[in-house]
Length: 409
Image (cartoon, rainbow, N blue to C red; front, top):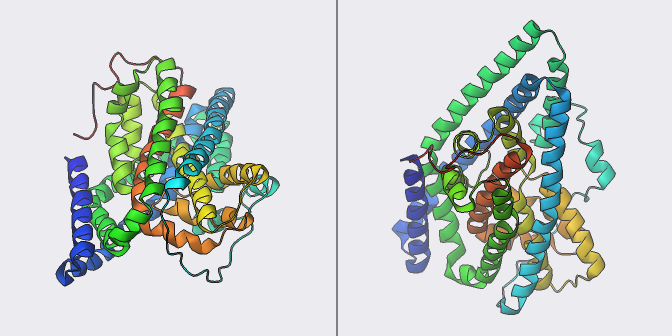
């Protein structure tokens, strides 16, 4: 029922927004613009719950596991799979974007206003910042990756304590996590209004002309995501005895939530439920890797960013040779790990990578205008990738029918 309501909000938002821009009707434009605060409130609610939810679940999962060798093996397997699949994700995004350039129509580029862009992180700086000097400052700045590292290290220390102390701390973290998951469900029941508030004004503002001029790019991203899923995730699921298409149905609720809300963090409770119930992943593995994946692993966003950099470089006439392409690949890998699991953050975090190869950062305004559709597509792929990673790292036998249950009907 909830999934249908969110889809209804999405469809109504598209209808109102497109009708407003097509007819220039004052009443429809007023409705679309008046709904924007509801979208802002929805995004704020998602941001509010992301950090405490991820930290509490990761802490409880690592501390509960206790066996540090098992934890290292699980994390090593998952981490290797994530990195190994991010590389082809970026490469496929760059490739489909390059092939689509011959079909790209002329676009009126925005003025290149002066924008202060942070320097692109080096690999050493990236690893240095994994350990936060101030945990609360990292939380205030929304830097999830250092908080994940802190939560995992603290939980590892807790796992070595005597049983009574460990159980008290783990139980407290699990109780906090349960309360936050309940809060997420409340937010999801407000999602139809929030999704309408995000879609309607964005669609009304972009207009048909911009949709048509950037339609090739959106189509290229969609094709790239389909190729990526077909050559990476479906074979992986089949290798681990999960029938590919029935597995997709078994994760349909989580994918639907992620697509509608463009947030993998919002889908965490549903992803946890469906990966354990329908995909046969053990609870301890799912509770560790799903929130970690929502924080760090967004292959759909990496693919989108690789495609977007090639697209914007073409629009601004910036040549990208082999050396620059390798630099883009490396930069996008680093940037994709710092994308917050909230709407449109994949666009904003591209600024350092664009600046590094000489593409005007003002070009991001083009992508922000039409980002809702690619954001929906890549969010669904992100959730699929996070669940697939849990399957790869888990050793539990798959159920006979991965699609025999569904959390959201």
